[in-house]
Length: 130
Image: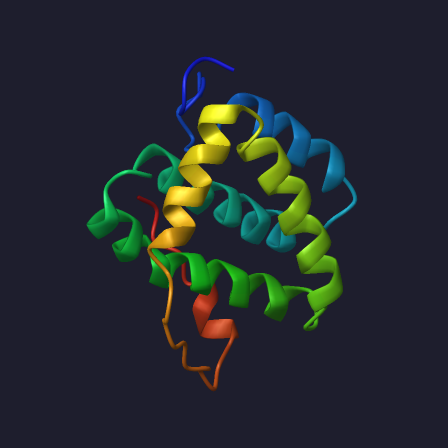
């Protein structure tokens, strides 16, 4: 739990403790669902790393929405499952006082935003490898 960002030894964009946690909670999921879950975590980690840079966090928002919509597409629109998963991942991502503080800062950037709904959720799964 080193610092705000934490340790990512394999540099895949997901903190190692979060990656291990996802491995456990998603062990029975198909590969394409795991890919969407990992993307949700990667975007969360990027937001955390840039929590005090509003411009960067807001620039990540389209990717965050795309990862959410891709997950919904791949799980046949199972929103209840997504909310549970998101809460579990967030509990791991923001598991220290400083990380919770950063989460509050991140959340402060999104007030008053309007989000439109695309026609094709499958197209949201075209992840670019950053």
